[in-house]
Image 1: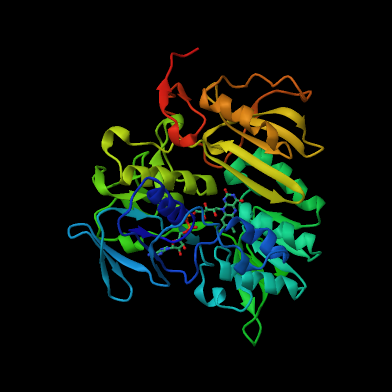
Image 2: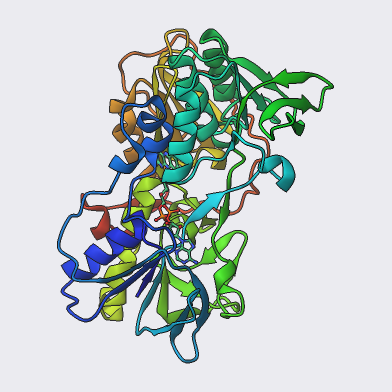
Length: 446
Ligand SMILES: Cc1cc2nc3c(=O)[nH]c(=O)nc-3n(C[C@H](O)[C@H](O)[C@H](O)COP(=O)(O)OP(=O)(O)OC[C@H]3O[C@@H](n4cnc5c(N)ncnc54)[C@H](O)[C@@H]3O)c2cc1C
């Protein structure tokens, strides 16, 4: 059984069949739609290029599954191996894959969140509603929170020539994901494109008109923004409530599991029949000091689900880890931003290629003398090079690729809001071309 009928759920189901599983397969999803793709929602869909209902994920193989869409799982009884559904049904399972992902964090004041034209952006319906609101050409859009989704939405507003204000509590856009040095570049990019960017301020309240339509926002610095569409992009909440009482290691941080997707119980012991994948999973990563990472990225949902599915139907000597090197992409303000590794794991950054002025560069993140991540702006073809260095725990600053070097290659503080606590650094190499075939090997320090 698979709970969560989105990217991880679908790819997990396909992998089960590809692994030769021929038994009954049930897929439960609380959304009424067949699995669809979320990255286009804040990009092509908002722009009006692709209708929200044209985002169905391609099917990679026949599934012969029983789909239960539009009904949520509300409980898990591991003793009797049943999943409880919102309609009262109890569905038995032998092996369970939890792929319930995350949802958008709502605007915290429910009455204000209920005002007309206050949106969040996670689902197909959210995107359809916001796209229609943008197509009606509002006088100003207010985006609260300048993470990836907020920044992408602000970029679409400017593409559509709609005035937009972005309010960000941190010091710069993308600062949590990429640090203050890159955040400053992202801030300049927004301003160059005409965004009214306000950093270091929070939105205290939203105000509606007599008809219940949002009209203005009051900011923590005492200023007011007049806006008739508001997007609250405040990050995500993991969908774990249905697991309460199940005895699994589930909480606001996600569902703890091993690198092969086997869920941990509350004592941290791996279970035999419950697996986790995608945005809701949190697993230790060999390259990152075995710290538990929750990776809310597309690639991780696919590869995590494939590894978990493999382990669900194979015996222990053949278990497979998900050793994916984390990575993501984003398109905003005409720039293709790509990253590999875990940037917030680093505390230093160095520009290694290209030019910041031209918004075409590569930068590497380091920690304790090792490269741990890299980011590129319009320079994505070099990402593989940096990925290889990260997998080898190569020295930081990394050996420059010998091409396109900037004048100043001095490392500087990466300026993350809360740097992690250092522990030991393993020397690890991931081998093989197919990520599913990768195994960790420890090598002596060079
Ligand atoms: C607007 C947007 C843009 C994005 N852009 C990018 C990008 O550019 N690059 C990138 O790498 N990633 C991007 N992502 C992230 C990427 O889409 C996610 O990593 C991916 O969707 C995770 O898949 P998942 O299956 O784990 O979780 P989800 O896609 O969240 O799916 C979980 C599913 O489970 C359902 N569910 C939850 N609880 C229950 C329950 N109790 N019972 C039944 N069903 C339940 C949910 O409704 C949902 O359908 C973006 C995400 C969004 C929202």
